[in-house]
Image 1 (cartoon, rainbow, N blue to C red):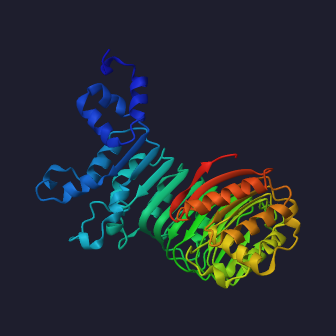
Image 2: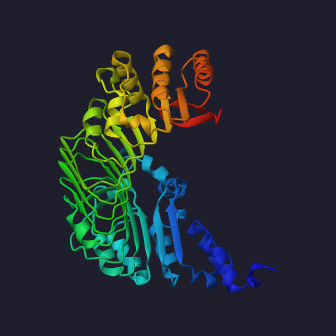
Image 3: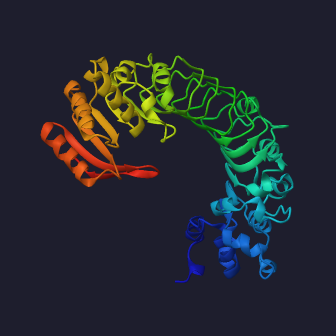
Length: 452
């Protein structure tokens, strides 16, 4: 049986599984039946590859390449029921620099308002998801009013993703149906995020990754549950008021003030060098906490969480792996005083070294948190095996419930030293379930043995 004889519903299902709508365009050319069925496709996905980009720039081949915007607009015009659009340039084009571009072309300026006006009105009534990944070389110096058109046209839009663009918020309208917003590597003309908060009041998920142009941003969203915020510049303050926020990842540099009011917050991942003030208002339900901080700020920032007695899983690491960690004194006993109810503790190489050094100078005092710790993850460099073993054994001697230990040894540590450490640990504490692994900067941790 040829494809021409298959039921239309099955053909539509096959076409819907194509991940690149360029293939859809090809199918339309080779078969009248496929061409007819393709008009009912509900999703269009089109990305400009590096190969296509280079061909469109070469004098020998550019006359053979149909303009990218033309291909996309034609796909949209030939479809009746589109509810999902994903449009952009391949990530490989992110390596193209201004020095590589000799003209002021806008053929891949995808947030261009005039381009949006060609195709968005055709599908806006039923559109639920829109993703646009612009070409930064062409978009970064062109201010786009696309957000205004989207907000005034797309009354059913639920998810919006825009990357690599300069966006204006002028004439932005309210979008009560939008629940998921991602802005990534975007210059946003909304210094305090007031327009985002007021025009997208029902956001449940918000991702602001490398968004520039912010000075004193404030997120005030009643329904927000998940937020990933990576701040690219250095705003004076960050204020987050989200009564239903459950999962929050925040990465910034040195804001003077951070205010977080999130009574339902469960998972908090905080990465920053320092701040003058971290004000946690009614954050009494945090159970999973991950801190990536500057070495000199270990004590100060950890003390800011002293009232978060609900924390059960704690991960601590340094923002800059090459910090001179020997200048700081901060003991494990102090950490466990701040977090008295943790059952899981993951220490990066920097914090482990700081706490091992503190142990060598003053020992390890009793702490309330030692009674609850059950699982320990330690990233070791092993400068002196005797002090490392002494510190580890002292922890296990005081933390009687700690029965699961995952030790990751730096890849460059001598194999004889690593082997000696492993055998000594096994013989000293046979009650412990030992797991061993290898870590190295920039590489994912590698598990070598499990449950020995």
